Amino acid sequence: MTILLISQSTFGQVKLYSKLEKTGFLDCTNQTMLWVDSTATTPLQDVNKQKFIALKDITIQKNFLSEYRYDYWLKISVENPTNDTLDLLFTTGIHQSIILLKITDNQLVTLVKTQEKLLPNQRLFRADDQYLPIRFLPKNVYQFLIKINDYPKATFVIKPLLVSRFWQNHHQIRAFYDEYIYLIAYGFLISVLFFVALFVLMFYILDRQKYYLFYGFYTISIALFNLWEFEHSPYFHLFFSYLPALKFTGNSNIYVFLTHIFYFLFIFEFLELNQTFPRIAKIFQWVIAFLSFILLADIAILFIINRLDWSMWLYELFQNIFPILNIFLLVMIFRAKGRIAQNIQIGSTFLMIGGLAGFLTHWFDNTPFVLLRIDPSILFVFGTLLEVFFFSIAIGIRSYKLQKEQNSLFKAVKESELRTLRSQINPHFVFNSLNSIKSYILTHRSVEAAEYLTDFSTLMRSILQYSKEQLISLKDELETTLLYVRLEQLRFEDNFEFIYHLDPNINTDEILIPPMLLQPYIENAIKHGLMNKNGKKRLVLKIEQSEQIIITIEDNGIGRDEAYLLRKNTPKYQSMGMSINNERVNLLSQTNDLYIKIDIEDIKSATGKPEGTSVVIHIPVE
Image (cartoon, rainbow, N blue to C red; front, side, top):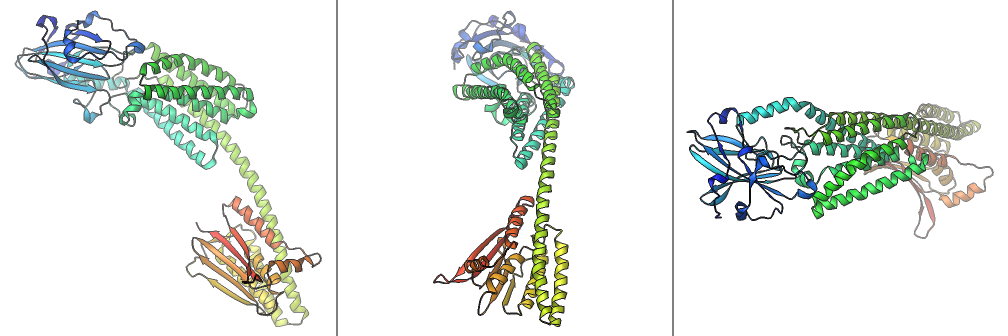
């Protein structure tokens, strides 16, 4: 690329000296010329034909809305009159991108360049993206063109410097001592916000209360807003640095809008405004819908239309709207009463004061920072932390009260019902057992009566012991059930066959089951199925395991339909065992999360004749 060189007198000239490499910096402002390309489209070969003006004589307009697409061109001549090779760093300040071109033999050659979005391992000077390393050979004169692309925001400045690495390192260390309090404050704030978000989102998974979800997203939005600002430093790379579209194409508008939307959703849901203040609830709904629309519009402007200036216009507009909106909604929040509402009111007040302080700091104090490139505010950090503290107290109070009330009521009702049901089952079974003993005594069968009394006393002790428990081991339940079957066989003089099978791979000590779960179904099979049948009678109890424990109780009795007709014709007959058992299983599924499934089916022949009943009980295995 060939161009005409401008005469030496057109350039300002900077003269280097040997000690510069070790000790300090050289301000090149007075020797630098500037030309502003308002179209940002001028061909490179035409740049030298433009009229450059001394940088010191120009006041650069900082109007982001109209000048964000401008390119700024600098010219400078540097002479190294010494006998030493000088390795220096060149900077024009903090900019989105800098390209340094060297004029050599009537040609422009790109020497070095840097961009704000580069990661440390991609930079020519690893420590900071604003510096470009240049080597100046002895007794040489260098003529440079520098292209700067940046947004002319309030902190925009062009200040060409040549500095030593020692000076840059010393400058960086001094900046750390000046700004470390901001680093600690923002690092602590971001950590707390993400921790709180994770904590409340876990509660949402467990409790499914919407205000947990909204508060979690609200704290995540504030954390992302602060992290977005934090990562504009060239020294910190955590999340946004690896997503340049979010860091540079997007701006703080997105996170500010998200924060306000989820904040209002949280207040709306947490204070139950729909029930307590319907009119205020309507206002909140309108505000949330309006902010959501503006957020979507801003995302489209940034990522589809690519007009950052329009987005900045929205930013400037809502910088004035948000304080007024927050004060208005805060006044409405103060209409709510109670301890929970008081914590929300205090937290919202601190947040508003902190946000206002941050806004005023950004608006009136443009003191440049070295480590943090977006103005930090300690008052904003404190305001946000206090808001999180009081909001967390409010959430904790409400969650504690709701959980305490629910637990107390739930346990009282369910345990009362379970005690009632167990008290009904026990007399029901005891009544039938005593009838069996009476039958032996009346028929003068003393030996059988003694055996029966021994087994019955053992069974009664088990019943009394297990009646206090909601769950017992399958081993204990089977021992009680087998003892009951033995008693029934004795009572009916072994006139039915009992087949028992237990899968040897089942560890019956570890499987939990409600006490006296099997007895009502076995009793029903014997009393109503087998005792009314002529011929061979058979009762089967089978326990197997697949994905669940499957207990099968099967008889070859007369079937449910015929048994129902016989019971219907029996005066004053009332059977409670199976219905009580079904209620008990349903209650246990609510109190213990033990979901037991019971299927009862009729066994019929190919011609449809009843051949018995099958009860299949499915017990989950954890």
